[in-house]
Each structure stands twice: as structure tokens, then as C-alpha cells.
Length: 131
Image (cartoon, rainbow, N blue to C red; front, side):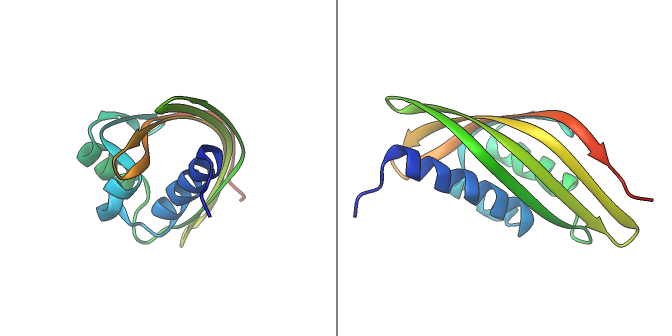
């Protein structure tokens, strides 16, 4: 069964959340292009290795996370796509929890290995840290 571009891109967004939650930073090439960029509260980086290192710093081993990425709005234009989505992420550290509400703006490119994210931009909206 052939999947549509929209279905493949929804799958890519889901893989992004899994990549972060399971701390699979060594598998960045299964999610991102080589020249991917990221603009997040953790900083701005260019290149897949810098992006993976930034994600590693922002998601330490002793902090469990769960990324809920919902309501993706996808616009495909040939071999390029833009994806807007809601993001709710929970950080569960031994010292306490932190919950963030954010918006993702993702750009993706069709590669010989399938769709990959070429740009991540995160816009924080709210944060909750229970006492």
C-alpha cells in the first residue's frame, strides 16, 4: 500500500517525538537532512551533528520526556513541505516536572531516503512547573 505525502510527513513528525523521547540522537539522519537547522529555546544551530548535540544537551539522560505533537497542518509543494503543529512536552526529572506548551514550525525535504526535516523552529507559548 502506497502512502501519501501527508501520511509520510505525519509519520516523520511522530518519529521526531520518538527520537527525542528515546534519546536516539545517534539516529539523527533518519529524521533530519544533513544541513538541517534548529531555532529553539536551547539556541540556534546549523548542521545535523550540531542539531543532535543541542538535542542531547536539552534532553539529558536522567530526565524522562514525552513529546505530544498534535494537529499537524501540512502543505506540500513538490519536494518540499511546511508543517505547523502543537507541541506539549513533559520533562520528568528526579527533582520535579516541567511542562511546556509550544508551536512547531517544521520544514521538510524529500530525499533519496524519504522525507527528512530540514528546519525546526520552536515558539514557546506557556510553561508550567508544579511546586
